Each structure stands twice: as C-alpha cells, then as structure tokens.
Image (tube, rainbow, N blue to C red; front, side, top):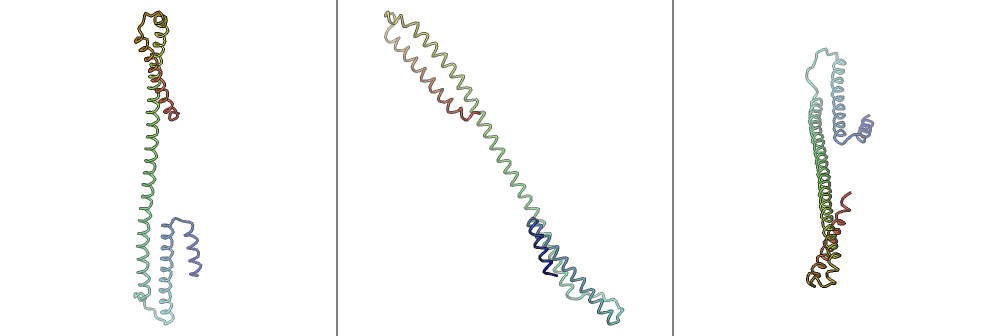
Length: 188
C-alpha cells in the first residue's frame, strides 16, 4: 500500500510546480503519519477490549508521540515551503517587471533616437533648400556677369571669387546631401 501511495505522489509531483510538489508530498506524509497514529490508538483500544478492561486510558502509546513530533516537523516544513514559494513568485514578478521596464526604456530610447534623427533630417533638408537657393542666386549672378567678364568690365579676381563661391556652395550642398543620406535609413 505504501508503494502505491508513493507512486501516486510521484505522478502528482510531475504535474505541479516544485513548491506545490514538495508541499503536497509533505501533506501526504502527514496524512500517512496521522493514519498510523489512528491505527496505534485503535490497536490500543482493541487490546483493552480483548483484555476486558473498560477503563479509559488517557496515556498515549510512545510511538504515537514520535509520530506526532514527525507531523509537527512536517507541518513546519510545509510553512517553510509556502514561504519559499511566495518569495519565488515575488522574485519572478520582480524580474518580469524589471524586464518590462528595460524593454520599455529601450523602446523609449529607440523612439527618442528616431525623433532626433527625424528632426535632424528635417533641419538638414531646410538647410539644403537654403543652400540650393544660394547656389541658384550665384549661378544667376554668374550668367548675368558672364557678358561683362568677356567684355573685360569685371576683373579676373572678381570673376574667380564668383566661381569659387559657386564651387564651395556646390560642395556644401553635397555634404548636406551626404549627411541626409546617412540619417535617412534611420528615419522610417
């Protein structure tokens, strides 16, 4: 009978959580010990009846007290397991909460980075528009002054300064376009 009880306990243990497994095992052991205590009392009472004794003996068999100590120890073990389970659940909840906070912080950082990149891209696009307008102005000035330069009405230095202005403005536009291209993959 004990063997069957142990097999049943093992089968139950495979299905529950570890703390509940241990608690259930301890509770089952307590039930077994209480059953043994009851058997001791019944055996004592049966022996009295067989002897024809009608006196009620309040003294408990020594084995009964040993079993009672074991039961009390197991009950204390159950309380310990319950505390461990509670602590484990709290720790798991805390870990899950910390993980959720880390994930939220990461999402916030990613969103913040995306917004910063989006703002930088917009600022660079605005700058690019202004740079393009300046280049258009310089190119218009170039076209207007070309006949005067050919006629010798504008000095070589003035003409070279105008060409350098166009070249440097073109380089600025290319750098701005390059910076926009670097940021664009980061902006959805």
